[in-house]
Length: 256
Image (cartoon, rainbow, N blue to C red):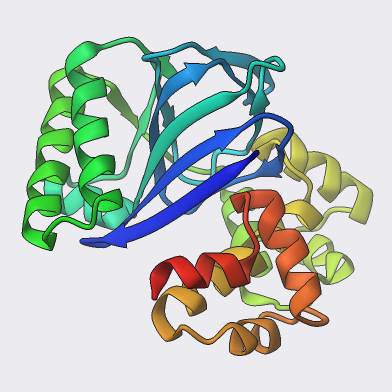
């Protein structure tokens, strides 16, 4: 049976996942997502390329890097992830600029151990100070293994389009494409080429991320429905589950 458990501490969200039939729709996270495959093979498409993470593989996702995900075969899949806000990672690492991972999967015993230590501390509801120490150890491990090599910058038009998609609760393709001096269809093609997802998928993901942020901070699921322009709770739950494996209502129950 598919099972997803979320816990949060020290500003970091940890996920423990065990799945066989579930498939993530293509989506992105605002945070860095760093995880370890424990059992089975993690199968996903990243930047147009198929990736397979085998047991002990450390998976590295940059913020807003679109991907999907599923178990590679019927044997199923077990893994853990930690989601770290880019500004928090900058603070911990002492870096001045946002960096991006140049390699999607690495097999490094020490780095794997540090990811697991942080994930297990959060999932085990250890003291926040202890979780912060494990985050520092992971950050040091990322720097030592030289995984964060280059600055991450968006195409100017893409950055402008993203800002507009974030700002509008209702998707207005005609207005955005006109602002960028492109036809509607040129814009859709241009955006997907540069991000890996369509403007509609990105906009929907923005709404889901906004809803998650409201649930994290206010523990009010109905405010998330209303303020993020979902039709009703069923509508929010449906889309939330495609990204996080559980409904928004189930996610909130893990935070209480």
